[in-house]
Length: 41
Image 1 (tube, rainbow, N blue to C red):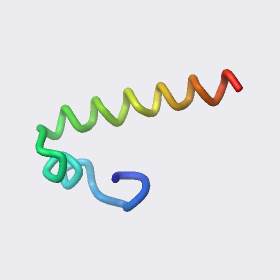
Image 2 (image 1 turned 30 degrees about the vertical axis):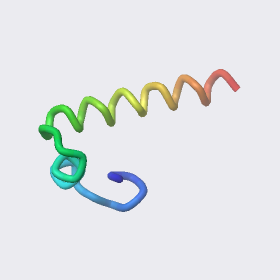
Image 3 (image 1 turned 60 degrees about the vertical axis):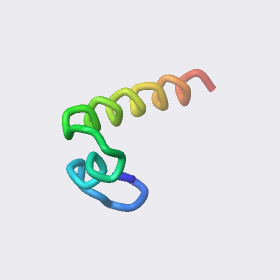
């Protein structure tokens, strides 16, 4: 949501029903996983 549609982290957190810090953690974890996957190609 943040990168695809331009929502702020606060807006993303509200939309998925979690705290802002949790949304930041999810985003950071997803980016780390994606970077690792892309490096392994």
